Image 1 (cartoon, rainbow, N blue to C red):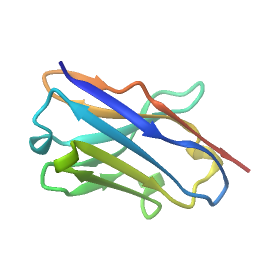
Image 2 (image 1 turned 30 degrees about the vertical axis):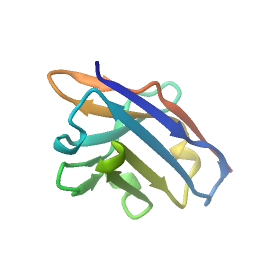
Image 3 (image 1 turned 90 degrees about the vertical axis):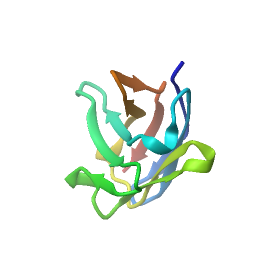
Image 4 (image 1 turned 90 degrees about the horizontal axis):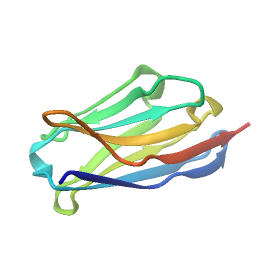
Length: 114
């Protein structure tokens, strides 16, 4: 079955950097677009970044220039490097793949303090 397992995250002060990773199994990883979403307390889950099977990334406007999504097909892993972090980036970050339905990881907490 499809399984997405995130790791990384943690706590950092404003302006710091963190990275999160997601290892996928049960899919042909190289053929699928992968995405990162986040959900802050009391808010809806929002899309953050996506990387297609060819390696082309797209980003939501609020993270452009600060976040970088990448993938390693040999390791079935997608990454999100987050720089210049702001308190509003505080959220649980989820890995996502959309097949016949959406699949999600368990999430990993990112906390940015001012």
